Structures are given as structure tokens and as C-alpha cells.
Length: 457
Image 1 (cartoon, rainbow, N blue to C red):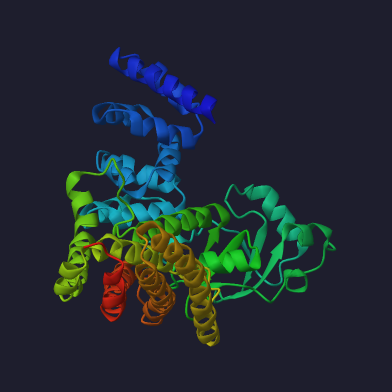
Image 2 (spheres, one colour):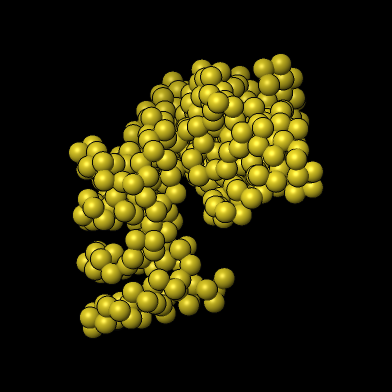
């Protein structure tokens, strides 16, 4: 891995020097010999002006491969610098799903002009009506389809003639006259079949498919569950619109994982990173920090109601963060587990009650263990057994609250069709902090006289 990184850095410097010295043929040849994934990495490392020059030097096929590898926003930025004629040629060479994504991102007028000049627009048009993060938006029309009465010999001869270079060569999809999906066959079944056997006899009619309007995460779950290398995408009438390939679904899994990680960290835009502009980062991060500030103020308001108590025993203030902090950490564990389980579709409606009871029991046992440990430690440290008792009991009760809230909030948000990751951490943190302070200080007020007995005057 390190060797590959060092090699790409050296190649980047070599291409930059070649462009600066106007050795354009050398720069283009060096770049074109690279794997598209390495091309994308090196292209992003170039200055904007160097990128523009390099794009003019590359042939259509290499440019299309590069665009297939770049992120959507990077592809859009590069494509906007191409002439409409050249852009149309590049779109013809791109994977249909990637071409559809780019056309959807381009300004409408430019997209219309490019479509009008494309030679293979019919491969892209069926995909333009679907959002990027749906199954239809992820599908490609670059697949192999056969009719039911095509013989094995005819199918093999067809494959030899067209020599398909698509991403789903291991599946042959069988469609009827209305293009409805009726079956699927693997190459193995085709090869071992008798020459005169028809696709109808060879195919498996139990086809796993996904609706074009389904979320891309649902498509990923289906492919993972049934261990598929390709997933057909159909419309409401079961007409085959396209196919999601295994490499596309890896991108989906990476995107969804990033989205959940960001959401749990209260970053609302999964497309931003440390290299994003200041404005993009502010828009993606500031709103939830504002929400968090109100949650913190609410917790502070709870504490303010016990101001007289803290004034009488200032020692109480030292340990309130312990109760709230451990409660928040415990709730965070529950939220992380619940969000992951919901994302992988491992929680059914009938399991919610059983899961809640189990997590509350876990919270009680963890709270008891931590409460006993911390309570004894504080009691010995401060030579105040009742202070230790209050902290220990507060930890037990707050971890019960944490388990309940950390389990229920993601379940409720999921039932309401909201992202359980995005709001869970804010709601759970606000609740555990406020309840932790209230429980701790309420117990302290009950045992106040006993605590004061052990405080030196």
C-alpha cells in the first residue's frame, strides 16, 4: 500500500513537471497508462489549470474511464469545462449509470444539448427519472438480456459475437416481449445445457429483484442477504430497467457507512471532508451544534434548580459530570448498536419489545457494576460513604434511563421514517444529561443531612 502511494506521488510530480514544461505528449501517455483508480487520485492532486490542460490531451475513452472513477462533484466540475460535442462523446463511453448521474447534475440546458448529440442516449434515458440514491439511480442498462425461446447455442453464439464488456457478465436476464423480467440464468447453466435447450428451460424463475424507487440501502441489503453479484431493477410492472452490479453496491455500502458515521457525529452532509470549503463545512456542522447548545442549556437549567443544594454542599458539583458522562457513554453504545441493527434490517417490528427489555437489563447490570465500583471509590476517597452511595445509585438509575432512551429513540425515529442516526445522539445526550443531573441532585437532597455529617467544618 505504501509503495503504491509513493509511486502515485512520484507519477503526480512527473506529470506536473511534464505539463509545466509543455511536454504534453509525455504527460498524456504517462497518465493514460495508469489504472483509472490511480488516474482519479493523480488527477485530483493536479492544479485546476493542469486538470483543464490534461483533459484536452486525453482521448475520449480515457476521459470516460476517469469520469467513471471520480466522485460526482469532481466529475461535474471537470465536465463543465468540456465542449458540448466532446462531452456527448465522453457520455457515450461512460457506464450508463454514471452518465445518467452526470447528466442529472449538469445544468438543464447543457444536459439537453449533450443528450441531443449522444449516439447512445437510449441507454441513459431510462435512468434519468430516478434520484441518485435510489436503486434506479444506481442501475446500469449495460446488461445481457435474452428471450425465453432463445436456445443455448444461439445465446453462446451471441455472446461470442458481441464480446460483452459490461460489469454483470455472469448473469443472463430473460425478458418477454413487454420487457418483463421472467427469469435469470448463470453462464455455467448456459454452458452445460444442451445446444437446443431454450432459455425458458434453463432459467431460474425465482428472480430476486428490487423496485427502481427503492432506496439504494435497500438494494445493498438484498444483495448482501442473497449473496448476489448483480441485482435486477424493475418498475411497477416488473419491466427490467437495469442492473446494479457488485462494484456499484460496494460504493453504496461505503456511502451509507460514511453517512451513518457522520450522522452519529452530527454532521448532516456526508459529502463534506476536511478539504471541503469553509461554507460547506459550516452548513453541514453548525446546525446540529446549535441544537446541542440548546440541549446543554436545558441540562444547565436542570442544575440551576438545585443551586441552593450545591451551595450547601459544593462537593456535589465535583461528581455530577461523572454521572452524566457515564450515562451518555452507555447510551451511545446502545444508539450505535441500534442504528447498525436497523441499517442491516436486523430488527423486525415484533422484536422491539424484547430488545428493549434486554437492553434495560443490560443497563441495570452495567449500572450496578459501575455504580458499585465508583460509589465505593468515591466513598473511600472522600471518606464519605453517603456521597459514594448517592453517586452509585445515580449511576444505576441513569444507566437505566440511558438504556431505555438509547434503544427507544432510534426505534421511534425509524418507525417515523426518519434517519435514526442523525437525531439520536442529540436527543439521547440531552435526555441522559438532564436526567443524570436530576437523579443525582435529587438523591443528594434526600441524603443531604447524612452527607453533611462527614464533611469537615
